[in-house]
Image 1: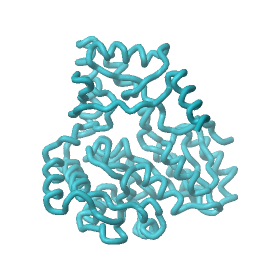
Image 2: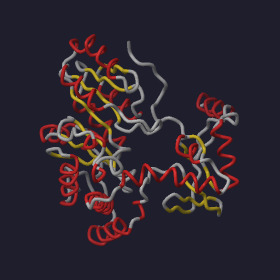
Image 3: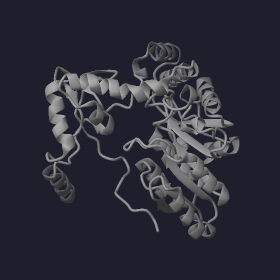
Length: 361
């Protein structure tokens, strides 16, 4: 206990201690704290769909029909027809044979990887992959090798050097990196996978809903639908709902139903959540030009904020932000103080990549 207290005291001293700071209300791009309304630069609700009337109505109807919770895991009695309807919709949306819904993005990544890979296998991960991807790789007990960020040539050299020593091999990346905002070079990564008999897993959490035709993601935008082996994503960002999915072959999905512990031993997502996710998927399929809204919106948003004395459009667009604290010398902290006075709150967000690490040789 004393060492935990010392850890917390040190974090406090360095102004790195995380705290939960509740809001009393929220709306798309807005949050209310201490009776004051702030412009929220930190939300993943990119298109404001979390309060869209179609999602609210779908959730309310499912609540009246099915009740609040699902009551059991899906392998018991918690499996409902709307779970399968959502999975069929995701599979079609992503151009894959089948899909499986998980309770969160973290549970998806930490369930998929240990279920499909083990001690005799290798996982080659982009150096900036999300913490949930890295944790999933560690849980699998496969050999984790990290290539330099968005560097297919470095990956190629690593595959030449290491691939032959392992059974299965996976190359893992995000399509849109949540902190840096850059896009993965999916086509060169896929080509390297094919040359070296590797599977490719792409995390589309921050791309689904905003990139590609009808928001189908970067895999679709690059013409690679049906070619990427494992396409993972979430409903909790641009789609405004909750939960996650994997789109893959029927064989992979059936294997996960039998082996993915985070799926097997979790109560199924509540029916109102599933219904809202379905409604969001239908909005995407209706053809809304979400990518243009997403890409152009920050500039317009930043200009409006700057007119109120907050961060400039360029800063608003280039600086990932959230509610939080940081050492006072940082430029992000200074922007946060400026934001406080203008009701535009933008404090720095810490990377979700886990502990810092270097790429493998």
